[in-house]
Length: 164
Image 1 (tube, helix red, strand yellow):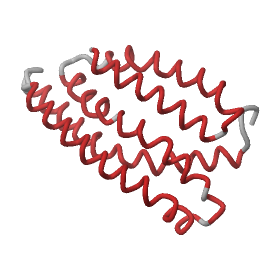
Image 2 (image 1 turned 90 degrees about the vertical axis):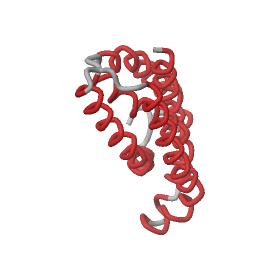
Image 3 (image 1 turned 135 degrees about the vertical axis):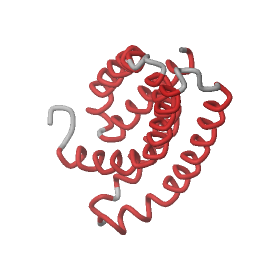
Image 4 (image 1 turned 30 degrees about the horizontal axis):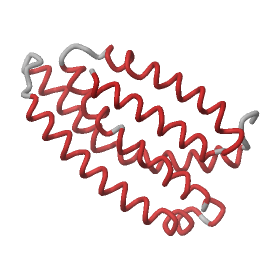
C-alpha cells in the first residue's frame, strides 16, 4: 500500500490476468520445442525454430490487437464499470506480452538443449529493472506505471534472448 492503493492493485491484477492468457500458446509451443529438442539431442533445426517462433508471434500479435480494441467494451461488460480502468492497463501491457512471446517459445528450446540456466541469467537483470521501475513509476502512475515497468522488463528480457 505504500506504492499504490488496493483498488489500483486489483485493477492491475485483472489486466495482467487477462493479458497473460495470451501466453498459453507460446508456452505450449515452448513445451513442444523442449520435448523435440531434448529428444533430438539438442539438434533441432534452427529454421524450424524460427518458423515456429514467427508463426506463434503472429498469432499472439493478432490476438493482442483484437484484445486491445475490445478491452474497453468487454471488461466493463463482464466485470462491471468499477473495473473499466483495467482496460487502459491491459492496453498498456499488451506490447510487452507480445514481445515476450519470443522468450516463451525459445526458453523451451534452451531447456531442451540442457541450458535452462540461461533463462535465469537473462531475466534476473530484467527483474531488477522491473523492481526499480515499479518503485519509480507506481507512486505517480499507479497500475499504468506497473504495466509500463513490466513492458520495459519484458523487452529487456526478450532482447537478451535475441542477443544470446
